[in-house]
Length: 177
Image (cartoon, rainbow, N blue to C red; front, side):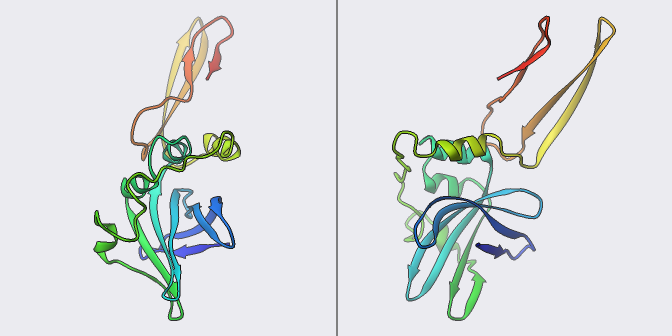
């Protein structure tokens, strides 16, 4: 189990491995608040093992799994960190050059996952149902003496707008996908 302690007292624990072998290479972690992080092992040699970590959302991970965004784009779209583990221990590496355009650590610009058909079906189901910190607004309606409460959740980190459910009033008052 991988665990990172970031310099702002966030503790990240391994959530879901997307790709790996003897150790996870592409995976997600969660912090104490349930926030999601995308992690990439970009170095594993005699100098140590290095991970690039970026705060993300389930919606962004779904975009990655569906080849709508590259691994590089996902890492750069939010707050990010670098952690290195070697014989001296585990430490944060705050070198800003790691995140520059020509960095040897960042994935290539065209680094889509390019999965085989159905390869990430389990992960897509998992992240589709993922709950992360959200802003919740409730609206109460009184229509024909029946109270309705419509709950709208907005993922505050999602870069775009994609509703999962919408309320469509009909005779059965159903939530539909």
